[in-house]
Amino acid sequence: MHLDVQDLRNFYYRSTLGRAAQGILQSRLVEMWPDVKGQTVAGFGFAVPLLRPFLADARRVMALMPGPQGVMRWPANLPNVSVLMEETAWPIETGHVDRLVVMHGLETSEQPSLVLDECRRALGPGGKAVFIVPNRAGLWSRSDKTPFGFGRPYTLGQVENQLRKHHFAIERHMSVLYQVPSTRRFWMKSGPLMERMGQRIPTILAGGVFVIEVSKHVHDRRGTPVGREVSRPMEVLEGLSKPVAKPV
Image (cartoon, rainbow, N blue to C red; front, side, top):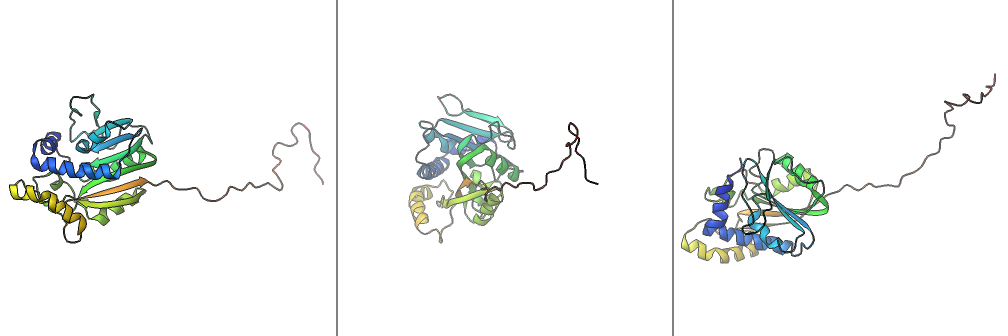
């Protein structure tokens, strides 16, 4: 079940823990996609906390918010680019999106397979998408103080298998949000250190979320077409205008 847009907004924009998570995830995304000049960038679910760096250079930025979640105006003090829509019927032409970010849109959906179908349909040739989902082994999926504590958490194998079944090619993945999901002063101060440690020794610490980058896999048509000549073409209409005598 989707979270309410007001709860998501309050977490990412009005809480210290949410702003810290926003900063970490946003920096990782910008590292992955440093140049989006002239491209169409879309976010599905509640991805707006990560999209602001793309507003300056992208040709167009769209925030797609599913009906059960609700919609909010975004960005503040700029023309609105957010839209309320059906999660399985996006108001986007096929192949129109160059970059897609999905956060709080897959694990909370009751129809994840249909959502992935729409993701693939919206992406154009060479398009890439980033899926941000809660890690089942991480602390963030076990805390209802964060939006990642709702919906279905995944193992890395589960989410990657699901993406492959919908014809996405896995490009890379990473584990993020190693800090403890607590607003206590000690944990907030140690958050940056834990994030650096987690990136260096990920086998010891379990990050709160997985960030998986995929590309749209297009099946190649292999082989060379071969024209075949008919040795004895059928003479279905022959003889209508010029009767042909058949041998007896």
